[in-house]
Amino acid sequence: MIIQAQNLTRKYKSGLGEIVALKNVDLTVKKGEFLAITGRSGSGKSTLLYQLGLLDRPTSGDIYIEDVNVSNFSDIERTHLRLKELGYIFQDYAILPSLTALENVTLPLLMMGLDSREIKKKAETALGKVSLGHRFSNLPSQLSGGEQQRVSIARAISHDPKIIFADEPTANLDSETSKVILQVFLELHKEGQTIVMVTHEKEYATVADRVITLSDGEIIKESRGSLQ
Image (cartoon, rainbow, N blue to C red; front, side, top):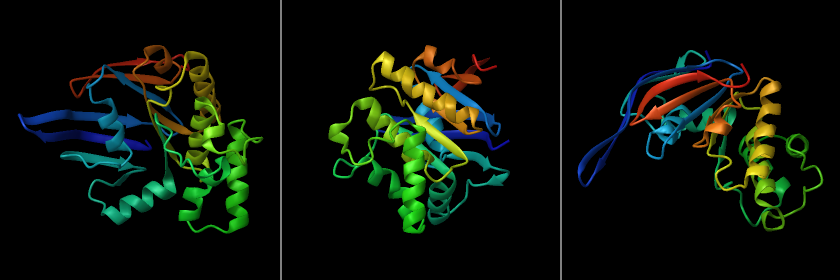
């Protein structure tokens, strides 16, 4: 297993007391698997992805990545692991408006301290994989929403991460553009990429190997996707 979560619980304090976003969740993800997490708004699906992707800390429970318990990693250790081994895609694209497509994709590579020629080559390769080889010098304002999301995907895969985490990657896109984005994920999956994707669209979730459904912070259903 590339990811294993045991008794994962996340609680938040609020003015009314305490909100339990996740309740003793147990979950495993196989290497090379495409897992979709779905459920209604407020079900805990994004909270779960943030825990698995080390973007937040659980209140209790353990998370293992490649058999290493990362639950008690320091902030520096978590940052290093995220930068080197994990990739992230968000619904708002999270790309910088003042940088070109190529420059946006180079950001994690620059942070890794790679050689400039290697950075350029990896960034160009990643953009080519998402069919944006002709858009290197374009600013985000010159790209469609779907193209901006493909830039964010290219950035996420530029350093060859072991796991990609995608939080509602099609939420701001129309149905046709969403299908294009999902096809990019399917192509990456065929190459052996492990993907954990959150979506509230059931029809999009079914393209994965496996689909888990959350309700009130608990897994209530698990089913096979169309890739099985």
